[in-house]
Length: 148
Image 1 (cartoon, rainbow, N blue to C red):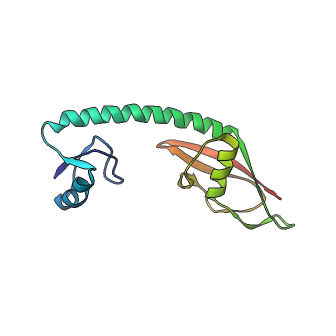
Image 2: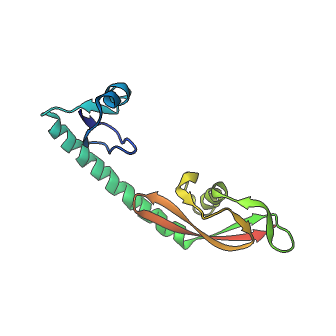
Image 3: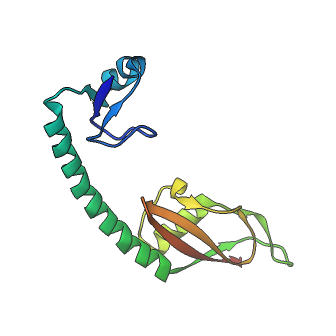
């Protein structure tokens, strides 16, 4: 069954795309939730308008994400945590702590799921993490963990 997506559906497509899905998925999920419409011959023009609007919003969002990336990469985040005499932390520094440090240092609010760490920080010192701000816009976050 061909449907026109009215909103982004993870793993399926973005707003304005015409996709082919199984009829049960369309009847039981996409159509009742309002995420899609049944595609017809006249819906091609509607899909084109939706894609144009989506591209305009994406361009603005990408520009904002690029500005945030520059600001995040310029700043050096310092996170204070309790540590032993040999530099090992009592606990660890995770994604939420990094998001809070970014908010304090730059004023940019991020979701903790945008931060990627190889593993939680457990020692005093310098480290890096990545923040996915937009599709294809990834900022490197410089972190310095100091003992309280």
